[in-house]
Length: 193
Image (tube, rainbow, N blue to C red):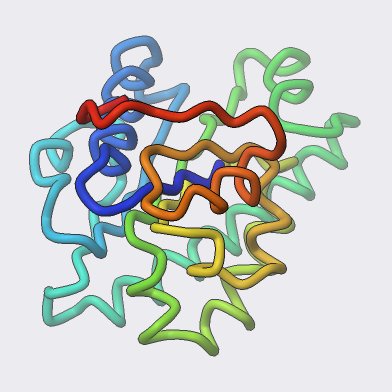
């Protein structure tokens, strides 16, 4: 899922709401979340949720090391799950869990808030590690939610992998058509709309 919108129009609130909603309706055995908070420590209140495996902030001293460890962990998880699904004759997480309820695996959400910050500082990592990981993750039950101000904030290879796209208020009206296609309606200047 790609979420776009100008600053201050609800992208971070949307991700927080999404994680809280999933945590309220799923046990920690059913749902895990990892958050890259690259916009300003907006996820501190989620750190103690048992569903949240980690929140990584761009301004912490160990940011680069923690980011690398998270991407490596997710890569190993995809590899392990692909083998498990193959052995269990399942095409994806949902088939596997339905066929193996006692060994059910949790769905995983990886939220990247303010992708432009990641791309600006780690372009090589985005190209070499993140994009291939996103490509391989969906069938493994790992979903990415990524925010940015506009589609040009992310490489087209990544943008095209994110099949669902929503947008909040955009200053440039032409961006609506780029994000959601024809039929985009004008949104009033009401915060959160």
